[in-house]
Amino acid sequence: MACPLCGHVLPKDAGSCDRCDWVRAPNADTAEGKASDLVAVMLSVIPGLGHVYKGYRLLGLLFVTGAFGAILLGALAATATAGFGLALIPIYWFAVMFHVYGIEDRVAPTEKDEGEEY
Image (cartoon, rainbow, N blue to C red; front, side, top):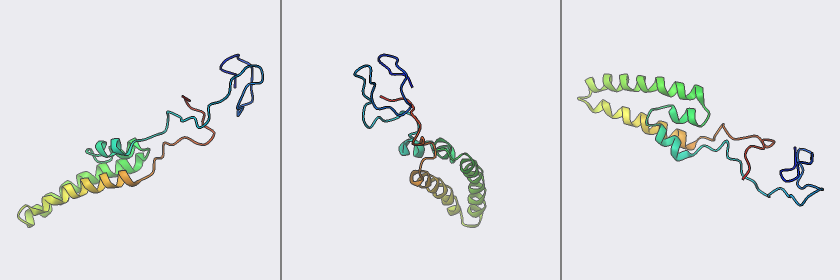
């Protein structure tokens, strides 16, 4: 890594430069790899999109196909229950939203990732 002030070549995990007064800022946050739970819940209006946003692509695809299954099951149950079976559809949507809110992000950077520091 090069020193940001003088350009002197430093070791990768250097905390300061021995040729100038540059010192690495403590507790630097990276801009990459932070998925917002609120954004994921709002994206889950389309079931599975919030899961894709958080890094769960396969699970997001399963929830999208599950939405079609929930609609078909709700329509089938609605014919037998005078329309009350349609309540299964919003229950599925809320379950997807609660699930995406509760899972951990898979897009988090590793410990060695330098990313953008500010």
